[in-house]
Length: 305
Image 1 (tube, rainbow, N blue to C red):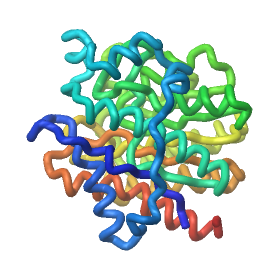
Image 2 (image 1 turned 180 degrees about the vertical axis):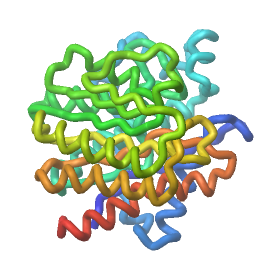
Image 3 (image 1 turned 30 degrees about the vertical axis):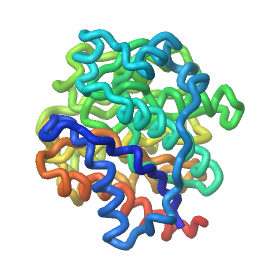
């Protein structure tokens, strides 16, 4: 069956009504179990990411400062999350989850994480609810360990993956692609290998054409050994922080298109959930679950094991 990665550490205790929906990871697991997609005992549980692997993309002093709860007031404010030991444990566990999902994708052809996509984190600072950049860490780890020769990151979060772009700017074999709403956070954009800025209000049909056209071109051009797919649902028309107009059906079509483009070329692909914001956290969890249900359909159609 489709490998799915999750850990109970992913939703630590968190202030009620905080803007970041920390409980969405647990609610996503509950939704996938309740909908019959997976049993809890079938989920793959990751180890915490070792500090030396985090250091492939991040400053060791910053890693230590975060782990010990010694971020400055300014750093905490830029992060937007209140530090705690459970948050620190969750953070390194979730990066470990993205690493495990990548390994499972290389083994089986596809895997999905019930977290991940922390694309705003920079070398020595947090940003936009992102502490460590799992996309950049996984890319560096796979390349430097010799597991792959080229990684393509296909980021469909509504916000530009600025941290990923800067962390991998000089890594020739890590290709960064960002589809994002042009007039949205961050105000100061980085330079990805491919930035595809989308206008406010873009809906399903136009968005899906961009996805299809860009993947048809880029996968043939770069022929990566693995694709890391950030399947942010903040492109949804009801998202609190996005300015695009995708429907549930549009997101499902996007996810299936990305996954099929990869598998049709025998390229392993990892799905990471990325951003999504809604006061109705159970509804948000179901929206994130579109990725996993879409992946299961593609998995079955492809006859993967």
